[in-house]
Amino acid sequence: MVYTIVVHLVSKPDCVDKLKAKLVEASQVYSKDIETISWFVMQDHQDPKKFCIVERYEHESSQKYHLENPYWKTFDPYVLPLLEQPMDLRRFNEMDTVV
Image (cartoon, rainbow, N blue to C red; front, side):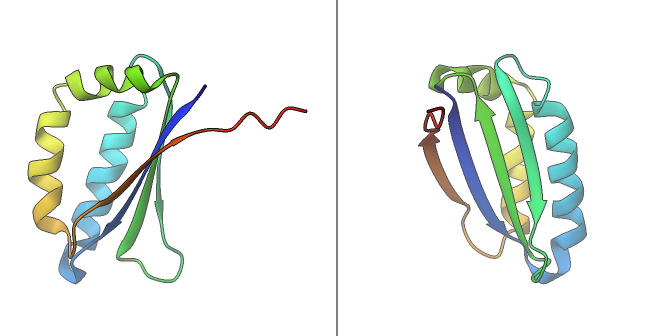
């Protein structure tokens, strides 16, 4: 079963470009982690301050590789000061839609 994390972020108005660059960089790094199916970043088409990350892993336990990546220790300290509000993080198990 695919384990998915969805994170919504809202940038401070003067930090949009910095956050966008960091999220693109993070996607390039994290997409290579073991048992990571995909690590997508998106920007709202109406409000450029709003971003979304969709992390898809083979299993819930696959997060281990993500959290052990040395890059992870640099991500929050860089990103958190750029945010207007706390990250909204939600965890899901993808449903099997094959009939």
